[in-house]
Structure formats: structure tokens, C-alpha cells
Amino acid sequence: MEKKLQKSVVPIYAFGGAWLVYALLFPMYKGVHYLAALALSIAVYFIAGKLCPPKEVWVEKALFGKTGNERVDSLLEEANASIKNLRTLRSRITDQEVLSKLYSIEDVTMEILGHLIENPGEVSSVRRFINYYLPTTEKLVSAYCDLADQKVGSENITVTMGKISQMLDTILAAFHKQYDSLFESTALDIGAEITVMQQILTSEGLLKPEAGELKSDADNVADFNSAAELTGLTLSPELEKENV
Image 1 (cartoon, rainbow, N blue to C red):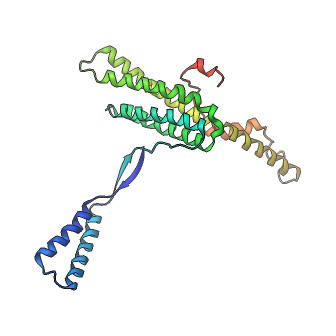
Image 2: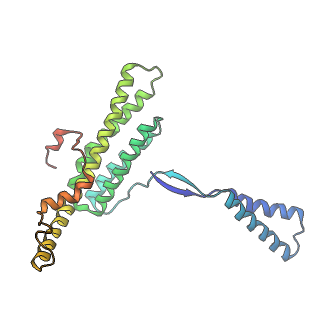
Image 3: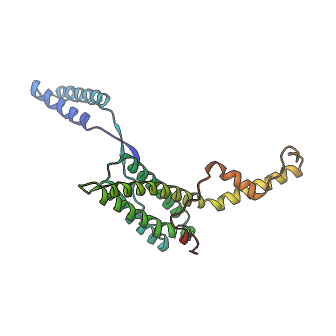
């Protein structure tokens, strides 16, 4: 979801209404009359615009189109289908906490897909995410909706819905970790650059060793990621052991 400004139609109707009222009350057989009507309508339009300013509304993000890369497009097609189904299921949910989780899950999913489009060479890094994580999330949300639709509640229904809601937290954390892992190579490259820079500065006497001991690439990578550490949650430990 993303916020967009939605303009009010009131100023447009006010413009037309002002012109009509002027035409009914005053003669319209000279050019000056048309100019006066136009001036009045424009003034009413701007006044109505001030009284009815654009409103911020939430709209669905556009799904990704084809890129021309067959492997990427195949995954995008699957992911788009999953997102559509999740949006349909989301429309059946009234619990605001669960809705908030689903919105967050979609947001990070869109970020992952956007990264894939910009980095098509990382298809293997997101294939399991699209082939397993998203469909599994669909099944859980579908089950939640079916339980919520039951006219007669029961303890089992309440408990199961609570468990699914908790699982959405785990899914969200796993999705964030998936997204974070896509930047591992970037972090390594930056860590290596930092190490080289430190070595050059030290060799030229611009950085005193005692003022700051040189860090290894691993330490630099750790520093790079420290602000965004995520829990090691996974949806399927067995799948984590598979090679993509």
C-alpha cells in the first residue's frame, strides 16, 4: 500500500454550477458576459478547492510487469498471482492488527521483487521465497479467513486464529531476513573497500594505528549490518538446508 493525494471533484462541479447560475441570472449575448461568467466560475473553483483540499488515500501498489528476462518473469508471474490472492483474502479481514501485518508483508514482498528486477542474476536467491514462502502465507491467510467466516465461534477457532496471527509475525520477520540477505554481497564489498581505505590511510600516515585498529572484512560487514540485525526465523528449517 502507498499513500496518494486524491483530488476532490467538488471544485469541478462548483465551476460548472457557477457558470450555470450566472447564465440563468444574467444575459449571455455579449462577450463581456462570457468573460464575467468565466471569472466567476474560476473564483468559485479556487474557493471550493480551498474548502475541499485533496485527501491522502491508501491505494494498492501496481504489480510488476514483464522485464524480458524469462527466468525473472516466470517468478514475477507467480509472485503477482500470490499478491493478488492475498489482497483478495485481506478484503475479508476486519481485525486491524492482522491487516497491519499483511500490509507489512506485502510491502517487504514488493521490495524483494523490486530488487530482483534490478538484479536479475539473483533469481536463485529468491526462488524459494516465491515458490514456498508466498504460497504458504496464502494458505495460512486463507485458513484464517475461513475460520473468521464461521457464524458460530468456538475455542478451537479462536485459538487457531490466534496462532495464525502469531505466525504472521514469524513470516514478516523471515521476509525481512530474506530481503536483508540479498544485500550480503554488497555488505562484503563495502567491508573490503573500508579495509583497503584504512590500509592506505595508515600506510600514508593519515591514520594512526593506535587511533583506530584496522578491522577485518568480517568486522566491517558486521558493523554495516549491526543497525539492521534480524532474528534468525525461518518458515521451514528443512527447506533452509536445500540447495537452490
